[in-house]
Image (cartoon, rainbow, N blue to C red; front, side, top):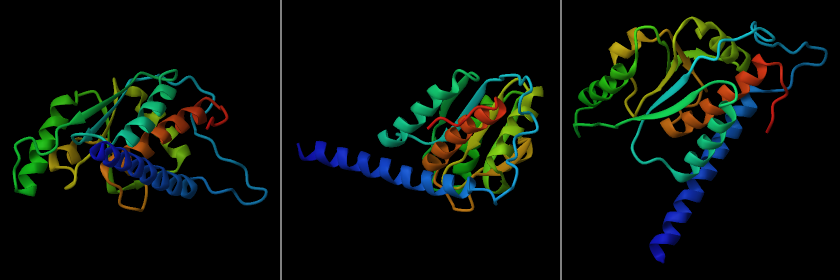
Length: 204
């Protein structure tokens, strides 16, 4: 019974932390415009956008139940717009104590999945800071590829091969986010981006 209570408490705390960071980042990205300012849409809003499959690759092992609940909810919301897939790259697959080797081994998992004609987006704390409308632009720009692949690294980030392969590097916040929180923010922003592209109101 004690273990069950601890497990539930951990899940609840993880869910609360995810929602807290998610709300903070969301408020930052969507401040009310100045009075009289015209709301900006995507350059692709109202156009026919190719619904290329989206694959989200995340380094990690067991995911927090609270985080998984949020991710699953937004994945379901995304499916009417495009095929979407959530895949996990095994964290430190060879149990190395060397951070460089760990990154290289995780990078192999990313590179084995990526195809030559994929449009690859690497999430990185030094990447381009995007607004939601710019995320919508990114989806439209990726229409020339066969798949849109988002890569979320582990504790030590990404390796050089993936950095060189990525078509674009972006950051979701000026805050440093762990991979689970980054995933939550990403799936919400992808859903929001598609509502922008379709000219729809955002549904909470």
